[in-house]
Length: 546
Image (cartoon, rainbow, N blue to C red):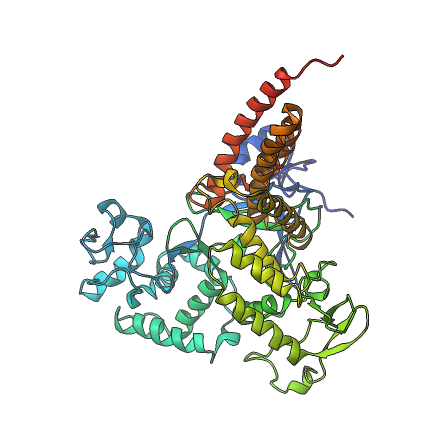
């Protein structure tokens, strides 16, 4: 028999269901309205599921359109980053010597009297008061060891003061077994466990296992919230259940209040797993997989990592050096066990001694050692390249095109910097750029935006920023062409530029004004109004069709 759905209010049989999450049912519209006050906090187009392979994960309960918000939630815990100069423990602003207010109860420094009374400060204030001696912070502007334990201490505080919150925090992954014995584990034991025991005199209150578990929870589940400099950390509940993919379908951002927003980067169909990229999708496959293994203790085998061509982009490919060959070298697979503390160190189990990179045209084979040496040399060249120098970027691209695929991650990295740089170096912006550089900027923006759409469609911040640059380049090209070809030409370019800018604004619409992308979104809205007026004026000035 099919299980009948019941109303969330009266438990009667119900056929109507919430259109947002598709998970809660009602017998009437009246009961749906009555339940909304409570339900809106949990209403998302995704539900928590669990199985042996993925553990807990989120699955779409309905079709989700690109740009739709999937989850928006407040943090369970916030706190300063582990390595940080003294910051206000109420709002996380950087503190300056001589411009601080001390908490009357505990002595911790703040930016204002108001911040000393914030709820977030209660844990360290409570334990400092019980310690019997106020904190004294006298050095500012450089990392301070007293702040390393604050976010962990705030987690521990919940055990005795908010059991419900403690239960949510403890349900999150800590990877304690994977972390044991690592350099980071030993550092945390000394700088956090021993500090909490000795400074706050809490050795009889919290044992090592509890403290190290909270260290792991913050490390694995903490999100850097980039609203301020330095960034602060937030630990969230449902977002922590979202699984990883190097070609994710969602991206995260934040509101001005520090809430996290998970939005769809592309259309997501009902029943699809909700995924986000835990690492930088613009890195090469080997770098991404090593970072994931070192930080989150799993070896990625997502569809992107499993495809050495990375959906035909050849993003990690090296140019074949055989005479007259136009092919590119890639290994048979990147999916090899990564050596870290928990893996077998015997290289024979990884078959690395025999790993080769093979040409897709002439089938020539080159040892992995030779390729890694080449990439290391190019990496060093990139690291010493002058910053903010378009000419240096062009020289790098021209030189490395002899060794790398045009879309290789090193080439893309420098091409991206160059695309954003062109126009910034001139007092008059793009108007002061020579024609060749303007054409180059346009080509690079288009190429990288198309690459992102294939490799990392959920990377909306970068794609939106690139499209903003592209719209400006197209508009400037139209201005120049119209000087010789007339207003009809300008109208065509402005119309195209507006279309690009509209897409850019759509990609950036969830970005807060504190971030550069949020400021670009604000400017895009202004530009769209101006372009609409320009299009109307140009259209009115053109002769009527015969």
